[in-house]
Image (cartoon, rainbow, N blue to C red; front, side, top):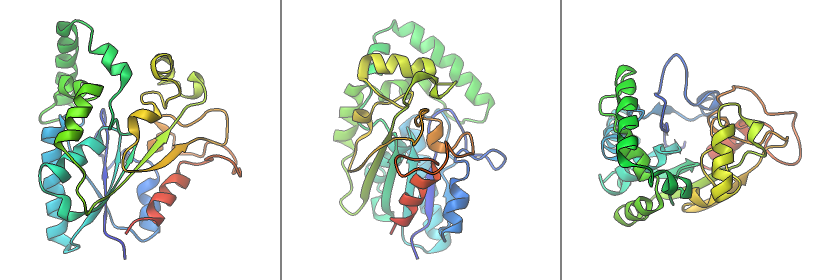
Length: 262
């Protein structure tokens, strides 16, 4: 029996019992015999405060179940929150593996450009965003710190301060959209990132997300590609009919992840 699975969400959303951030993936894991838990960290919290929340969640799961360790599946910034909990907060001994989907381990060249904008504009926009996420339930939102941590300079510092824990297996996945119109929510950001970094999932290019055992760039079996939203099954449906080439349903990726957990 594999260790329990802890799903750690990314920026901009909360875990919810009504609308699941992960779409159909948790039910798939449960069907395959895995026990599923959620991180419950802030949506727009820094990796300092979110990492602490994840560390407390890991400790709670281990104590309540006696499982010894957990497997973590994290999307986007959630991967940084998990790494901080593992490396800096001493949770490595309780983690068997960390699988990240489009986590900006190496920083974003596009964010580097954004950080050159006047700081007062970035901070003003971040404060307004923090107010909104406090209304939605965040305890300690810190949007400016979150955006800053996505820069390549901050990524280098984070990686230096949070080295991989030897006993944890690290795996990473990258995804790409085939054209801007693949996702109505991310068409503009896809075009911007494509200008600076080439193909991407609407937010992040493959070079930004490679970490540990890189599982490759996942492409869809149809023209739409796989966006940052598709990675967590936002549409709750297949991309297209089953094909011998490419991913026709994001659950194929999650099944691959689930089948390889320890």
